[in-house]
Length: 240
Image 1 (cartoon, rainbow, N blue to C red):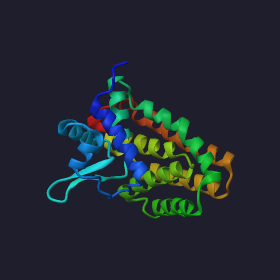
Image 2 (image 1 turned 180 degrees about the vertical axis):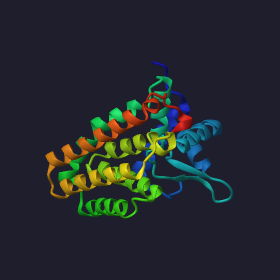
Image 3 (image 1 turned 120 degrees about the vertical axis):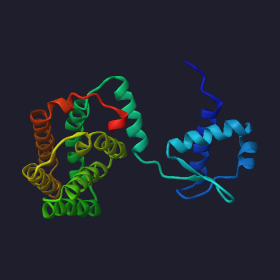
Image 4 (image 1 turned 135 degrees about the vertical axis):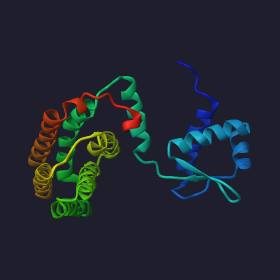
């Protein structure tokens, strides 16, 4: 194994110190002079470490007087980019993501049936109602569709699922890669979401699993029947 670069090791120490010091999003890190003394490194190495952390969404580098590194809350965008690049260099098709969702999301729904909070359940209900009331508006449909699956992923009580589904949904954005959602298809999705919501609201893990499995399987069959060439298209960073 190649030894890690000094800048990477310093980045890891900075992250450890952020946690140890109790910094939260919006807090400023110490000034450059203090960090140079604290980590006993040169200015170039420190700046490389900070640039890496900025790319990972851990900090933002604010310019000008009173600027410097400010702590941020990372989101799933970095994970999405990393996964997209990995899959692109494997020449993996979009079907890879659809199959992953078919395996993961029913499990998330089952966990959500026993772990989802009352507040999250209300947010889930809202997404279903808004989708039903705005079935003619594809923009609202797509927004509520993403919100529905995102709430279930986080409602599973598994943080990994929350970030993973956020990444997968971003990578398999049907509207971006060319999938069409006619009104009859939107109606079918709405009815499936309503069935999943009822199962989770009833706190029924088995019914939640089965309803989500049926929903994702139906989506996969629809995509396979209508857009097989798109599912076979290799994943590309530029198309995600």
